[in-house]
Length: 448
Image (cartoon, rainbow, N blue to C red; front, side, top):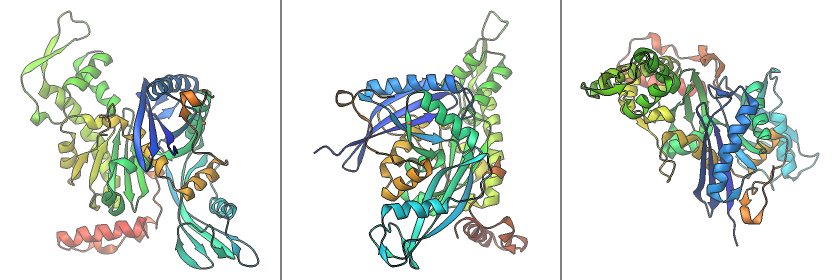
């Protein structure tokens, strides 16, 4: 009996749109197809032209369909962490006047009750993560279905984003003839693949370095706790190279890809790189060191701006350190630059699957991994958020089914106010004591 399922991840990036098709069978996830297309209608990770974005999505999906030999109609899409808000939620319902068996509909109702928030009209719930259920006062229940009780409660976390971002994403995907089965905040999907179990449990920082923006996200207890966005990325590095060397953007991008380095100290000082300069008939020769100085300066600025909010939250004291991913993370020696600025352990993540061995594919892989690992309660929660019941086993092989046409202040932590910090910061203590205090402060603010 074939119990395999297909999951399709859709990563709508600033420079490229990537589609990853995975087959899940017997708890194993295999990548069976990948499609990539240059982005259109996308700026800084946000869709600004629905029609152009829909066309690019169609082309990327077509490439993935050809490679995977399936017809794609339903996708798992990543939602940018721009202006993300994270809040605790709680709901309670009466199952009945007398004890009765809790059914799936009761779980849906308590989730809906937990989502009743005084949200501003311009915001929308993207994801609901149930943390625990309580039945008649008995806590720490993961799945209450089949239990007997009178009162059902749930506590969890809701992630909200601006309606404009969510609406434009949904509209472009619908225009491309697709349905959305899961909407996932991008850092949540990334955490499924870039962090190991210990890092995700004890805490780590993911820095996703895209073309249009750089996102730093804090993950602890397997949940996203904080996310902050710097609106500069790889495109700004390309722009700097173009301006400083007086060359076209296309030439600057090629120089970045072939000769780029994040450390000028580890670069060659010989003038052996030919640069076509606008207005000159003969190319100019520059050194790799000079090119690296341009790249290093911009990346240094991005990391330095992210350092302040991460330090304020105490996230740099988490044992998992920092994991770099995204297209810009492929820049040689970028880990050394990050270590120098953040003063913590740093590593980069690159997918190991054939055809995806580049950090820009991390999100696409994370999306299909996230969807394949969702348990029944997670699927119900997603259905409640989307307002529909969804059959997960939707993408079929071609021969069995025809084609059918789914800045820092904004990223609020889920915890106590800033003033709940301990006063130990004002007391002179040994360095070891200060570090412990920071960790305790971080946990008290975000993980109580």
